Structures are given as structure tokens and as C-alpha cells.
Image (cartoon, rainbow, N blue to C red; front, side, top):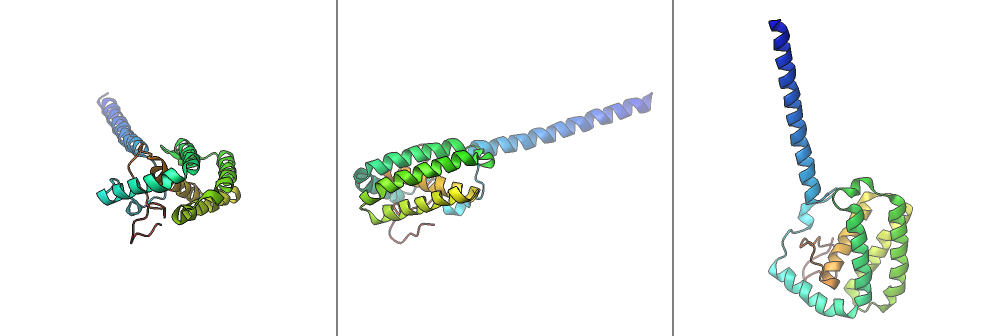
Length: 184
């Protein structure tokens, strides 16, 4: 009888330890989801807080390039909303590729309509890069390409539209590049 009680206690303690481990692992995953999925990210590519120089550069771009290219700004805001909804909070791990291709085709068509109206060389470079990435989505299912598009429209949304939902800048645009900087 004593042996049976010992085995019972050992089983109970083992089960509690396993449950505790699972709770810790779940908490860790939830914390990562809340912070956002950074699949394939490199934190050295971005900065969590904008420096004063970056804030000044953003304001300058918003007051010049942003005001001159409001239609592109609207297009970028809509694309950014799409990518936030379909890739944020861990959704990047289970992309709907048909939906991604549909958005890429729409984005390409819209960019083709607006590209001739762009008179800023840096913005034109970024829009061409965005168009090229969207074209890649039509032909391949690479999460890294979707991540790059999302970061590009995120930074452009900040540059053109005063998007303030998140302060992180990925430094992947020529439009926000400060003298001496090189966009990734």
C-alpha cells in the first residue's frame, strides 16, 4: 500500500512539473506573439526608438515628398494595413498565399498607374523596389519577400502619411535615408 502511495505522489509531482514547464513555454510564445513575430528579422536593421535626427528627417519628408505624393501615400497606407492584418502577431507563420498573390497583383497595378507621377528620385527607387518585390510574390512563396514588403510599406507609411501606430523604422527605404545612410 505504501509503495502505491509513493508511486501516486511521484506521478502527481511529475504531472505538475510537466504542466509548469508547458505554462512557461506557452507564456514565452505568447510574449513573442504580443511583441510581434520577427521571423527572419535582424534587430540591427532597425531601431526601436527614433533618434532626434530621424524624427526631423521624417517630418521633412512628410512635409515635402509626402505632400507632393498623396495618392501614393494612400496606396501605401492601404497596403500597410493589409500587411499588418495578414502578417502581424505571428500570422506570417501561416500565410494565405492566394491572398498574398492577389494583393501583390493589385499593388503592382496601382503602382503602375502612379509611378509616372513620382518626381522624387528616392521615392521612385523605393516604389520600384516595392513593385519588384510584389512581382516576386506572384512567382514564389517566400516569407522573407513578404516580410521585406511589409517593412518597406511600413517605413513608407511613416514617411508619407505620418503613420504613428509603431515607432520602429526598419531603415529599408531610400526615402527616409539621411545623408550618409544606406538603406538595406
